[in-house]
Image 1 (cartoon, rainbow, N blue to C red):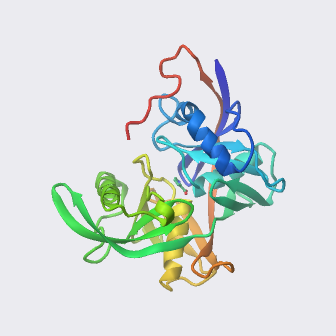
Image 2 (cartoon, rainbow, N blue to C red):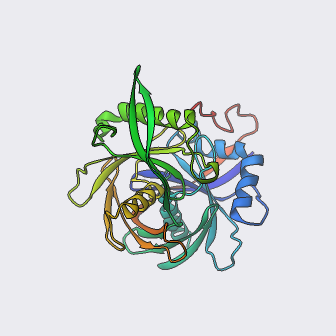
Length: 325
Ligand code: PYC
């Protein structure tokens, strides 16, 4: 019988379940090395924590691990229903309120180590958290794809950008836009189209830098909220959509807006999600590399439960029902 203590939170509607004790021993080294150990030796723990019958397909999991830099408040590794994530913006905001709930951090700025680089978190009053994310950039502009949906094939153009994960970003308008309503009522069509975009990227061997798999698809449309500039739909690697506006996806969007000269440093971009929640995002130029930006994302998160997961060795589904997605 294995007992794993977790704290659940949601960030703008998107849940995060964080292993706070009873998780696997990942050894030491960098957080990227510890993620490799988790992936190779403890995938059954990932599945036990996030998959049914304890979890669900849109639940993002995380484990707090030992940081390499003693000045960091924590290291963190994110995962979901089908495998490991690189970074996770909403999850890092969830981690901040979780560390505060545990009494490990107080208001102010703290350093977090992730497999893709250091992220700063600033814990603010009233459940607000600002993250200073990893350097983000547009890798390719106006990439043309042949996308097949429902027996018809048409050309779609989008940008490839890094914001802590790899994204393909498609606007709604124009002959090569997605042309869909970004609304919950249209969820099935949004999911079908985004999956077809991902298939087209794979078929065409289009990747991010160094062969990075583009496993997130982000579609944009006009906002419903008057305090936002855009509404998005984000398809995650396990075929679920992000209920939040996606922290790494908003970082990728900021990089594209900066590359197009459509947003100035420090100017706030309001990014609305499919469910009507929102992040504020802005960027500073990266002094180390003029092709990159340093994005900041602000959102809110709430603790939803503290619990102990029990993995009974006689339970045939003790390590979760592997997602078929
Ligand atoms: O907020 O970066 C994010 C994220 C990635 C996957 C789900 N949420």
